[in-house]
Amino acid sequence: MNKKSKKDIIILLILFAILIYVTLTFSGKSKSLGGDYSVLNKQHKGLSVIYETLKNLDCPVKFKNNNLEKGSNRDIHIIVMPRKKFSLKDDKIKNWIKDGGKIIYLGDENLEEINYGKEIDSREDFLVYEYGKGFVLIGKAQVFTNRYLLKNKEKAYNILSYIEKFPYENIIFNEYYNYMNSERYSLWEDLPFGIRLMVQQLVILIVLFFIYKGSRFGKIIPLYEETQRDKNEYLKAVSSLYKKADCKEEVINIYYEDLQLHVKKAFNTMGSKKSWVETWNEKNIENYNRAKRVHEVCSNINKKKISNKEFVKIIRDMEKLKKTLEKRSESYWKDMLKEPQRKQ
Image (cartoon, rainbow, N blue to C red; front, side, top):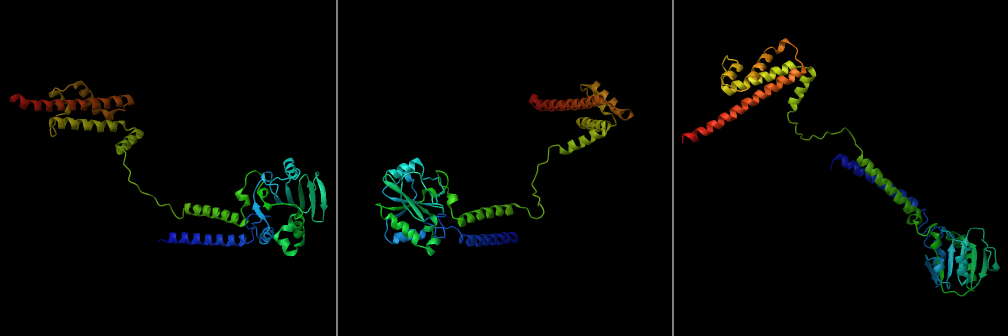
């Protein structure tokens, strides 16, 4: 394992340790499961104490998340500090109570009054209204919380004692309205603070890790790869230099020397003092006039400045003369191959 890999692991472990420490520190101060005013919450604002106490006393107590209108009107539904839109004055809720529904509604410090039904009891901590076959008890949410019950159990006992006057099947802690102000639950909204903090820190840690791993440290190390050179690359480079320097005469001389070499090789006159034009004439090769013109121009090439048009023309003439030589060589070898067959 190299030094850089060890350094990465050490940094990651340090970040992970910090994440665990912060998470454990804050999660101990969180709202526990369920959020405020939930029977699942064992912290100060939870309702776990009253719920577990009633269970231990063998009371028919249950925890549900049901829409009140769809719930049984034979049960007493306890609704504490709802976060979702909820109103006792809603027509659907009123009709449900009128048909026999029973609600214990625990809100803030100000007891809410309703404009329907008959008030059958009024106390310091709660009001009771009778409407049709059902009833509504309106009280303060704090009297059921774990923190308050450690100091004062009497007010919670008074409420529970009072509802014993009415017939019911079950006491339902209904937390359907304790999630969010919409018809669908929000998992993120209702996660405990500690868990949300841990998820956020984990996301930050992952982002920082990838940023760190993606950062470049030190100088760039070049990656050498085998590359194939362009065909005739040097020839093109030299041509470009000649073109920029306007060396037309030098180019013509190079082509002319190459033409002379082709002629001498073709007729095996490398050591002869004869000019290539004389050899061309003696061998009776076609395009003699063109060969003669090329010879005259190239012999006097350094005595005058040649134009671009003349430059292109003389180069083309020399290329055509080379092709003439190539054709003659091909036809010569074909004739040589045919001669043995004729003799036979």
